[in-house]
Length: 102
Image 1 (cartoon, helix red, strand yellow):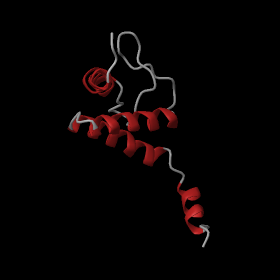
Image 2 (cartoon, rainbow, N blue to C red):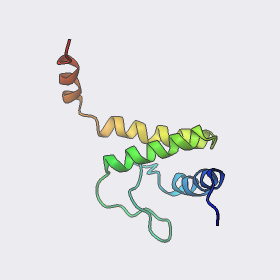
Image 3 (cartoon, rainbow, N blue to C red):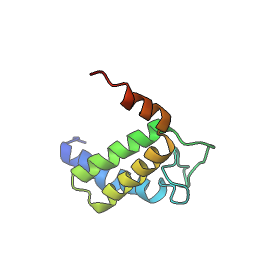
Image 4 (spheres, rainbow, N blue to C red):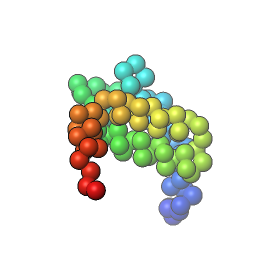
C-alpha cells in the first residue's frame, strides 16, 4: 500500500482523531485520558500528564488546520483550557515575567 499525504491526512482526520475525540476527552474533569483500553474505554491512572496534553492539543490543532472542522478545534480548546488551568504555575509565571532581560 502506497502511503501518500492524502491517505495520512484521511487516517488522522477521519479515523484516528475522531476516535480520540469521542473516547479520549475527559468531559467530566477536563483534559484528556492518557490511555484507552481495547474496548475504547478510558484507563484512568490517577493523574494527568502534561506531555499527553501537549501532544493531543498539537494533533487536534493540526487536524483543524488540515480541514477536519469545528470538532477538532473544540477538542484542542478543551485540552488547552485544562492545561492552562492545571499545569500552569502562576508563581513561576509571575517571577519569569518580572525577571525578563532588558
